[in-house]
Length: 202
Image 1 (tube, rainbow, N blue to C red):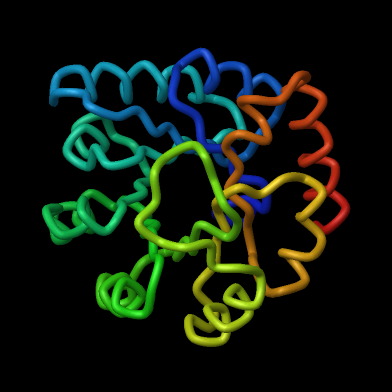
Image 2: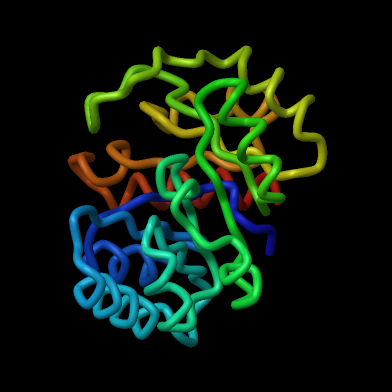
């Protein structure tokens, strides 16, 4: 299976990790904010227990120390977290690393860290968190993909299932999805749509 999978939901709780794992999702990012070290370690440990023995790859957002201690295999860092992280320790632990980017300077910073994938966002306007950056738009995906070459490119930010074909055609290898799943009236049905699309392309 590729990493990350073409459909890449981002969620904030163990309940969501369990729900998506049962639905057969291949890559799940757990993004929970404002935790102290012990809370983060407990969360990551519990999430890894949920995904153990399944097809789900758990990506830990931000908490690189917890990821190392708990024995996670996948990590995602934003730019602020990247600046404070111990990349040598992360690599020594064997973690695969994804990094968020929003502009040229951030892409240079990310590429210097030799990431296993690069995320570009927000592609569209998103209400989930206040962004310092304007929406990137679909053409930026093509530009970014040309610049990073064989490194997988993840598109994120305001993306719905209806946008998927156009975003993949523009060069994205994976689409990270938040509200299109977590705020959907029927999340399970929506996940199955995304998984069906991914299966068609496999």
